[in-house]
Length: 374
Image: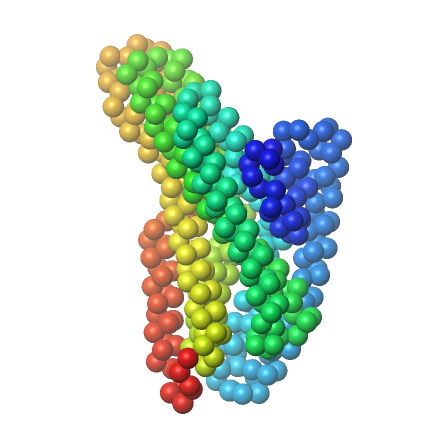
């Protein structure tokens, strides 16, 4: 599985956040004994890593807050909360990684398994598969290089960033989780496009000659996709809260980096803060766009095909199958479903960007004119 998916370089990254046992557990070649053992060792490993990096983050906050409070009485509360949230919320990546490990494995790692799930009803050319695999490999390689370069840069610039060696684990862990999440979202976007095109071809082929059997098969395919993408009403509220916390963390990061961008007078520090601000904005956009595509894929291709069917020409059994498919599955609003992604629509994305833009304008107005220009 690892060789076919070209993800061997990121195994150390996955192992660092504790989801590697679940990846092996989900592998097609996992043995029965490992399937019983590894899920039991995953959560304690995540808790241990979470405790270690939490201690590093607490020390980082305790070292910085007294320095901030000694400078400006009006700025101390805002900077204290910014430091606390910006350095502690990324640590939620460990328990969130464990909770989403099944989704991460299915949607980001087991790429060819996802393809085989729809291979029975959709045949594609080998040239297209090779092109997608090359794109997948190039994307993975670029983000792996980024995950190596970012902690290395932080280690080299420890003096310029005014950090102590004890702060390095928290900082490098945050950068590591950041790049892993970016990689996860990018691969999801690639797979959603692939699945959507396959579904459209499949339904375009079966729609003209619809029968009760083809509609029933299509409904079963849709149910498998729904399960694959986490359309589960029992766990959707937890996933919704996790996604909101994640976006809160990203927005806080943007605010923190933007504040540092305006406050610093060093060119390289200014460049670094600006780069991170843009990266966090791109990631917020990618998450919301992925959510939009997921919701679209779950409904629109099916609705378009079913609407084109002439119900008057169908036999009674096929008519009942189509009505059952449409009324009980398609027309239901998936509120708080698909891993809580339906709330992350484009209007929500626009509100996030407007809030961040307002904050940047506020910072520009409050910047001290005596500070040197970068």
